[in-house]
Length: 332
Image (cartoon, rainbow, N blue to C red):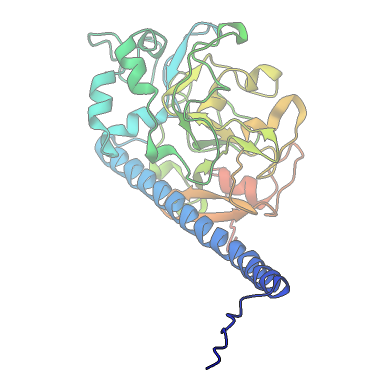
């Protein structure tokens, strides 16, 4: 009796290579869809963060009959002093009351003409608070409410030390990717045309003072940490070093750009004289950035929105930042 050996037939090398190539093509087709789905989820989370900030701003206004200020205090030394920012005031309305209570922020300069002088004990001015190990530990923890999940950057804002210490400061606080809209041009400490003022020079605002209407006025926008390899710088949750503003180079080393933004340059700009783009708004969402409007709604504004970079506020983007220019925008 003869026995024939059965030979098992496997894949040839050519067949295996064809299968691998097909799998590679399928993965290449699938990967962009997966990335788009992930970005859509991140953008939705960013939108939700801004909506929660909007609700907190409305609750703050209901409680104090005024809008949250851009920041507090006036200690004029750009190198050594710090100032609490708007996000700290909102913490009790964002389920961060424990953080606020531990910080016990005091507004330590009686020249805060338009805000109650808080000199409670302990006297926690920002530049003193960062020297307290316990308080510093709190301020160096990421605060998810102020972080866009699409923004790639360090948890601590390593571009904005507090205090500044002539550019040699090495104390960094939690990064914030959301900043209030202060002015349609450069950030302005006095007589800004946006909705968020400094307590030293300008009287507090109310919603009634937003005469263009809350649905036509930008309150908060995004600023990512880097874009296209350029440092944009995000912001800082707790406040800012010094009080620089305006068109000078110092306005992007210390001052209000830690907590606020202006509309001089287009959305997602990566260039500007004296690093002026670092005063603006930008995001890592493709094609634009999310903004919170005064009515609590969130809109994605394309980087191609009508915008002029001359000295006059004569574009849709600039008009959206201004609170009382009387321009009827319609759809945007």
